[in-house]
Amino acid sequence: MATIPLVDGNLRWVFPGLEHTGEVLDLVRQADAQIRLLAGHLGGRASGPGSGIEFHRLELGQASLFGYAEAGDVSFVVQLWFPRRCAWDLSTGPPWEVNGEVTVRCDAGVDCGPHFIEELTPREFDSPTDAARALAAAASWLRQRGTAEPVYSWRMRDPRSGHD
Image (cartoon, rainbow, N blue to C red):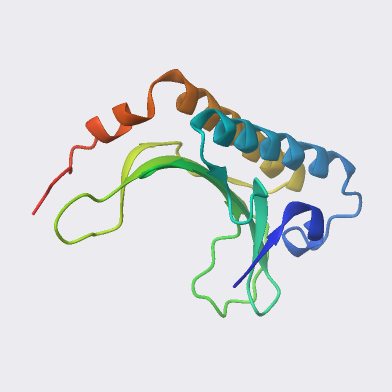
């Protein structure tokens, strides 16, 4: 999988039938700005090479939009993607799914991966514009959640902290 900054990608990788990218691109840029602002607030970094929202593109050409801001072991993640059965599934949307989540890294002796603290219910959309609008809303929600309380408080809310 290749990680490609938003400015270097093509929305038609995610939305192959999209004729006019203007409105969708504006909404994705809004999501990008929210992730960058959150990263700045947290004193951390935005996704990948500092690109806010970025493309995750599979070798076969399909892509998703992904962004996160993190501080320490706390991550604020947003994603717009086409749900696939497997990595070699050549299908593209619609529908597209959008989700947002706040996670903390496992702090147990054996790391089991991220622990989910808060999550937006994943939703599916048949329209590129509606999916991009939901991505912007999810990124805005993450920024609101990430600035509402200190970063350390997210770790304290982990019900699985220190599990065996």
